[in-house]
Amino acid sequence: MKTPVQMNLDNDKVMNTSIKIISSILILAFFSHCSKNEDPKPAASVNGQVVFWTHVDDNIGNVEVTLGGVKQTITKVIGIGGPACGQSGFATYQNANGSYSFTANEITTPFRKWSGNVSFTTDKCAKFQLLK
Image (cartoon, rainbow, N blue to C red; front, side, top):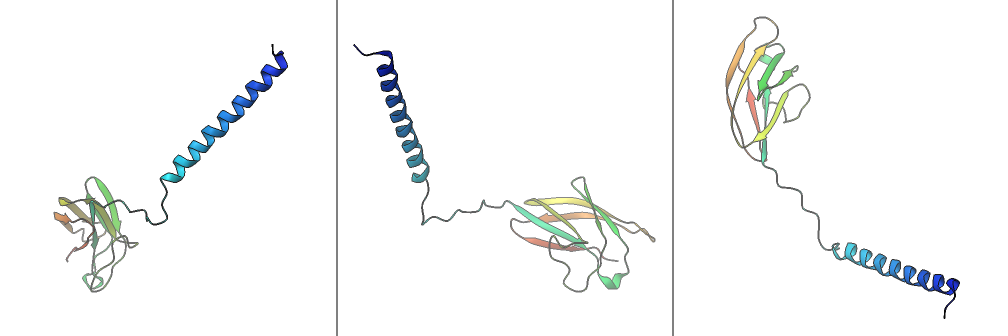
């Protein structure tokens, strides 16, 4: 018959062996999902962008643009070609494909107003110039 000390030693050996086996299984499971030849693929975009802008020669002041309930302010002007989407000082919006209505109001005199629709296309940056 085994003494209580011998039984505890046997239980410790079983426990240590079980921990080693479980650890090995977890490590193998983790590394089996990794591959040196696979590059992670970025998630496909379903959104497009539109940037609103004014031309330097049109002498238009700051303009508040509202699209989908979100207001942004154009605080800069630019020459031919317009800004890039996301460029500071211009109003850039990102939405799913489709046509969306907007309003725009000049904050300073003569308080011009614009309204209309803009189209968003996946992975495209459309430029929408507010004309004098």
